[in-house]
Image 1 (cartoon, helix red, strand yellow):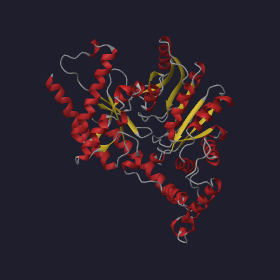
Image 2 (spheres, rainbow, N blue to C red):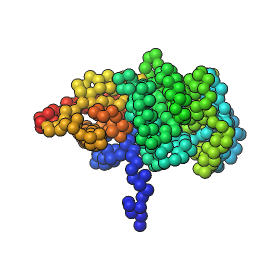
Image 3 (tube, rainbow, N blue to C red):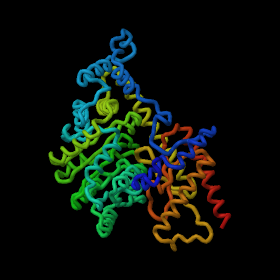
Image 4 (tube, rainbow, N blue to C red):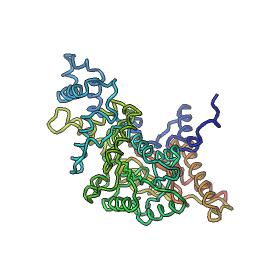
Length: 477
């Protein structure tokens, strides 16, 4: 029998906070009949977001093409979707149950290239696009390719999405933290990047890539074009590849802001030497098709022989799942004005994004009004990274602690807070220590995906809980 001592030590060390112990406890409480408001993970359809009719109608025809032979098909499906399903079957005659090319179905990769060209106004090569099982598999593929020596490291934002820290641990690489600037809407700071990389090199680490999440997870920030230019210049000066996690590009809510892709900014700069990996997914945006595990990775500035190794890596896994590839196609090639299905598609899309924008405002403004809690209205994505203040218990002096002692102390504090919040209110959020945070600060990450009434309830319960929690600590001093 395999014992815990037999398990890969790298796996034992890896942590993935968004599905950790607090979530397990939430599921136990739910099983006991408690109502739980799950705000721990960006899983829209699990939180009552309805699937887009367009997506499900096309998939139903592709999964069971015999429907097209039914005389009732024309009554059930818009004419353009019937035509589209027939076109897809013509281009992928083996159907959804057969392996595809390792890089993905060719016409879908071309559709992704067309999408990028239309989005950014720049050329895109379908031969540098790989279809993946969600963005996560693309990220993991890059780690597999670039981790060459034991001292190779990756610069990742703090706070970060724990896919990055967990994968670095699993692959035996080194984590190089750079802190996002909370006081400046969570933008990247060049001085902080320089500090981070210089410290890593002093410790014998060889940074090979920098990861950037835009719009931000868990921060909800949207990066300015100048901030992206700075990152590209920094990457070039330090011989780093860039991993641009852009899965929330459709989720921008703040007036006057817009999503700028790294590919677009790199093209404007005429940069030909920095390798760029950019990722997109069907799980986020307004689709919320997390379960279909679809996405793509675009690669720029990579020699043919190196790209051949990436194709080899993809072939080891045969191909990404076909339904996910098809949903990726439907994401990048949606109905157009004049199509029979367009009006419903546009209405559903607008309703989802409008609802997210409204809930972001309810959450951000409501949390900011609570004494001792701090949150900006999220500019984008699906999350807020909320800072909260707690007094220290009598006899505790954090300044007297070592850095490791303080890290453990603060992780224990935010974890205890979030667990108590769950027990007392049914609200399930993730401790900030699971994402990383500046020493001396406490945070939690929450989504604003639950229904609007639940977000309003969350704010009300949070105020009562936080006030009582702080008073309890003070009374014990």
